[in-house]
Length: 218
Ligand code: DX5
Ligand code: ZN
Image 1 (tube, rainbow, N blue to C red):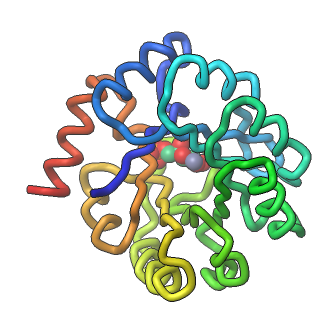
Image 2: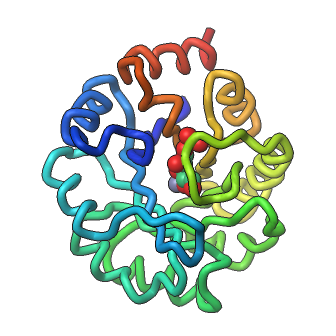
Image 3: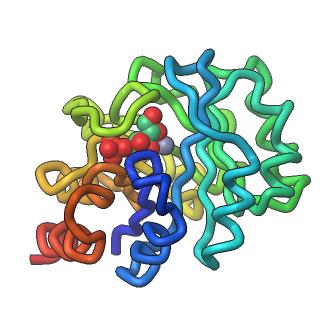
């Protein structure tokens, strides 16, 4: 079964607790939090304070996606805020290995993310130590972008790499997952799908999730 991690980026932040409650009741698996610094990506979102607030309103695992340069600086803060899984970008630090080690020392699950232009081989040295390999299927920065078709082939290759090097590492796909692409990413090997605009839009989350699952398991 594909796990769903709704990104709150496209939720109505003025009623975030309700949106998360709705997602939890609908049966989503994780909550995905997109942290952006306006440097690594051309957008700004939120930091540990909001993660801490979300922690108070849900028991679901919090999947924190750090799109910030030198993420090492803030790992402790996000761990303390209640993140269960912390993902750093390969491109955002010269010391991705150190960052992954630090996340694990903090007692959290560690993820590494790569952008669409980064060769998949970037995962290889760290894969044996990862809990999550996050493949970006859009350029990070904004919700509601179009899935980059080449990502499907990259997912297939990542799955082969994961199966060989660390079968317990989960593969997460992030960006443009919707009714048209969800079956394709699942078949290509994704274990977890981030979905922002496909889950948080003008329809109820439960309806959106049901529609996605129908496409998957029909
Ligand atoms: C993009 C973020 C994604 C994004 C997903 O930078 O990492 O999590 O918000 O949104 P959708 O599903 O709308 O592409
Ligand atoms: Zn994300």
